[in-house]
Length: 295
Image (cartoon, rainbow, N blue to C red; front, side, top):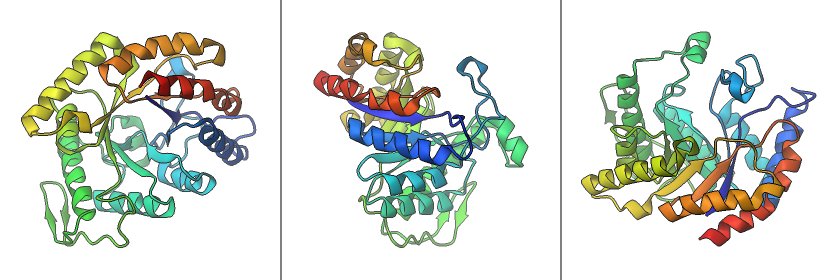
């Protein structure tokens, strides 16, 4: 099992001037610790979640600009957003952005994408926020557009919501046939069906518990059977929603993760706290080794 790192809080002492050096230090510490993936959120406003100490008036960075910065200060860690809301960028532009990240990072980009949910930030910046059904329709078309732009087909795309006269994309990505596609969310009827149809990875949430994750994976397996897709080819990732993992609690954490590894979870993603994230990430090296030992 691999370890990923998801940075959600940029409200560090001395912000905004401290954000770039702190984020750069986190990225370098993550690479040194052997962490496989590094992600940030894709939001215009910070989330409105008081339980996690987050408020909309706190610092939030534009996602792909941030990944470009992280590409320049790292050399081998995989980079992505967890996850891009389909409403935030036109799909043709999104494919071009992810392609650029892949080229400039030496083939380390991942496209994480979902149906979007944060209505407040859309209204705040005047970005259309269609009903959920339409957002899922747009999500499926966006996936089709990205895959077409990452193929040899430069022809038009005609969908219900998007129409592209030509899907020219030069240069192409370094990763072929395309960067990995991760779809976030646990919806059984639509989200996991899209995972089975289009994605290389899915992201589930630990708040569902072991039994809940087992059920979601069984649903995904059934969707894969219906789509004629190899279930084992999809990477299953788990966002750990809970207190930060401390070095002195590594064994307890690994005991919990052993249950998820037995279900087939391939990677767990941790979110560092805001107090001293660099030191926290440096202390994750034993967790990386312990997770690798789980298989």
